[in-house]
Amino acid sequence: MYDRNKLKDKKRIVVKVGSSSLVHDGTGELNLYKLEQLVRLLCDVRNQGKDVILVSSGAIGVGRKALGLMKRPDTLPLKQACASVGQAALMMIYQKLFNEYNQLSSQILMTKHTIIRPNSCQNAKNTFRQLLAMGVIPIVNENDTISTDEIEFGDNDTLSAVVASLSGADLLILLSDIDGLYTDDPNTCADARLIECIPEIDEHLYDMAKGSSSDLGTGGMVTKIDAGRIATDSGCDMVIANGRDFHIIHNILSGESVGTLFLAHKNKNFNLTEYIENRHRHH
Ligand SMILES: Nc1ncnc2c1ncn2[C@@H]1O[C@H](COP(=O)(O)OP(=O)(O)O)[C@@H](O)[C@H]1O
Ligand SMILES: N[C@@H](CCC(=O)OP(=O)(O)O)C(=O)O
View 1 (cartoon, rainbow, N blue to C red):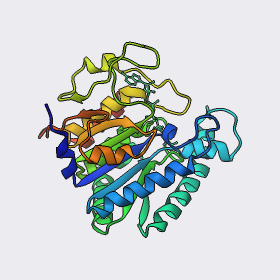
View 2: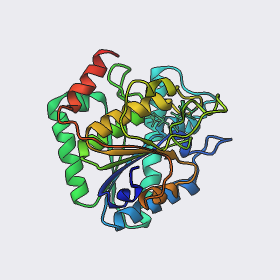
View 3: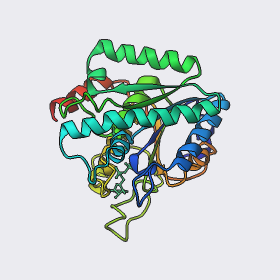
View 4: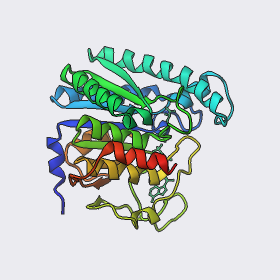
């Protein structure tokens, strides 16, 4: 049995929040109370001397609301227009909230090309290192406004694992609308059981993982297992937990047994650029 207390000693933490964790269920409008709580918790983790990176979704959802669209945008230009409006709005709110705690934050927008091109991959690494050395909390999202199907990650689960790998993080926390990985999708299968720990990812895990059943989420569990592959091969533990109440970040970092923990196992042969390039070719 893995001792969850080891999570208390993590030094560099990437937290990913999905769109569904940031908005009110009924209206799809931003949940300002939760955003405030998220920012306060992350500042407190920084105050403990740990490095923090936030990967936040929500640009398209926020933009869609601001522009008054009734349904999820279905064309690329519309999606990109929503992201352009929404990303700026989201950053304005984050910076306002982080400023209240005297915490510097910054924006990093990435695409697959950032990783596939060796120069830009190295630049991204250097930028993360420099920002973290100066105590900044970088806020990362996909550069949706310029990414096309071809170069987009498409889901922030994979992106957050890439960020964890690039930045040498030792813990990735994926906050979703579900308690963790179940033996089947609990929204459609009543017998599904929560899995507490995944020591090693193998192909049969994908049989349990289904896509997203919500109007806001994109990846479902498949992309979370993909993220687990990248993170654990890079030597980073990963926890999937429910973002209904962001206080769970504190519970995880206190060693409580919540969510599903995927255990790191440094794979010397793992090469991030090659991995993303291969996925890219098979896209
Ligand atoms: N085996 C599984 N265990 C848990 N959730 C699953 C599983 N298979 C599919 N899902 C679905 O994945 C969803 C979470 O992913 P997603 O919709 O992308 O949300 P988010 O953007 O909050 O991460 C769950 O609500 C659930 O419907
Ligand atoms: N980059 C997109 C998010 C895409 C995404 O993966 O969303 P989610 O499944 O809610 O984490 C946005 O900011 O709207």
